[in-house]
Amino acid sequence: MNRLTSFLRNYLGDVGVVFYISLLIITAFVTTATLQPEAVEATAQKVLDATAKNVGWMYLMATTGFVLFVLFLAFSKFGSLRLGQDNEPPEFSFTSWLAMIFSGGMGVGLVFWGVAEPIMHLNDPPLGLAEPRSVKAAQLGMRYAFFHWGFHQWANFTLVGLAIAYVRFRHNSHGLISETFRPLLGDRVDRSWGKIIDILAVVSTLFGVATTLGLGALQVNSGLARLGVAEYSVTSQFMILGGLATLFTISAMTPLDKGIRYLSNVNLLLAAGLLIFVLVMGPTAFIFGELTQTVGEYLGNLIEMSMVTTPYSDEKWVEQWTMFYWAWGLSWAPFVGSFIARISRGRTIREFVMGVMIVPVGLSMLWFSTFGGSAIHFELFEGAGIADAVAQEVPSGLYMLLDQLPWGGLAAVLAVILVSMFVVTSADSATFVLGMFTSKGVLTPTRFVRILWGCLQLLMASVLLLSGGLYGLRTLSIIAAFPFMLLMVLMAFSLHKDLATDIRRREEKEELIRARMEQWLLRESEREAERREEEEIHPTAPEECPRPACAADSLQSGSENPKTLTDTSPENSQR
Image 1 (cartoon, rainbow, N blue to C red):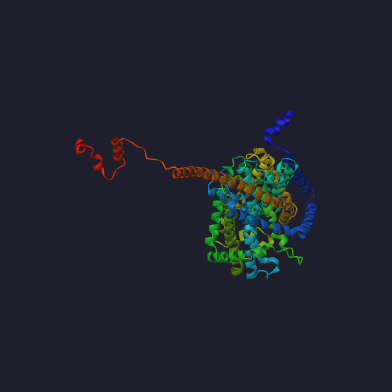
Image 2: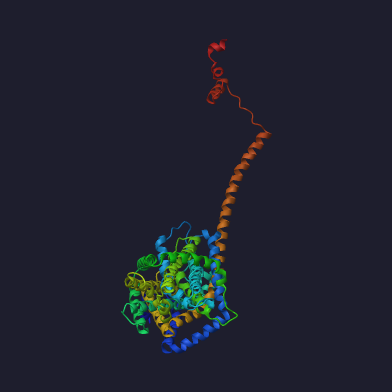
């Protein structure tokens, strides 16, 4: 028994109840989904229908509330608070920080949906508001792509990341989701309540990351099929996941400031290169015109799009798209938020919100305008057949677009490499965060724990692909995200309470210092006033002194008539 305990301690580190219960839940689900994928798919669909019908509106209300909340924090008096000690410099440079946010955030999703979503909306217009494959359908598709990858999506990551970074670096607490609830729950976060919160965070994170890994496998498989390397099939996707598992295991063996950091910087360079290639070689003027118009339409219709629930019809478009995106973002929030928190030490709250929510949104808009806008241009004006290809195989849209450009084959190879590296970075980042969650919040979980969670999330992605493919990934994301959405609402209240307490203490400290300074200055003025009052009541009489001494004093004070003062010679005395 002692040997087993020593073995577990050496390889697992200081893990606890959260680790073992989360491991049990995930293992049970993976086993069930492997043995009975059809039953899991049918059950998940029933749960999804009930969720969308009864509480679907909560996804929309909650995410909209998160957008308003984090913007309020950034531009209020809370924005000057630092995620760390006062005057503490940031741990990473601004460029590396943004690269890690982008890579650890939604890099895989952008590559997968950059062409697919606008074209899918072109084929099946949002809410039936336009004729399929019309100009209006194209513009609606671009607007909703901006909406789904805009402020709402990144507000989820911003809220969780801000809450974790604040308690971790401002209060030197553990980097756990449960720690963000301490202002509300007190020491109960150290007992069962805290354990339940952390277990929900682990399960939600695994489903969210597994969804992304599944999308990445689909995208890589489609690219390899276009290049004639492998056929598009579930078997190929499993083999791709196995190869990616090997790569991220190698990355997981390196420290955070080397492995993930270097991979993120390379990802950013590859993504920028592919973006510039399509921007220059594609319909550049059309791209910027589409970007300008769609930004205006997105901002002009933001409130309306945020609250669409279609209560008067059986329309399932909101469920299949908007709810899926919000649920996907919510399920990713523990992972992305924790990872962003880990790399954001030394940033102010205002800088954090602007960097995590505003900058990625701008990049996402440019990405969709470049890839989605180019695909729409070639489809509407040149009949490229991209819409038909996406209708048959969703991930193929990116490669069909690249085929329309010079050196499209080389660009397709670059795209496959980019997606693969995004998947590796996301998996590596997720294993790091899951290790933190299940190792009592330590900043450096053991390699064995990280690799274990990496294998489990790849197994989860595999069984999700078995349980309905792309649609199965959507379904289970929405279901798994609901409990954590409720926790995030409470997290916002807890964070505000914590920030308000910190501001109040700082204001009380400043007020105390100001009062002491005023008291000190007042005492000085009081002493001066007492002296003057005493002088007025009892004027001070001039001291008498011998004539030579008085003359000497007058000389030192610079008398205006020195001649009379020096006229004390013997001759003058005789006269």
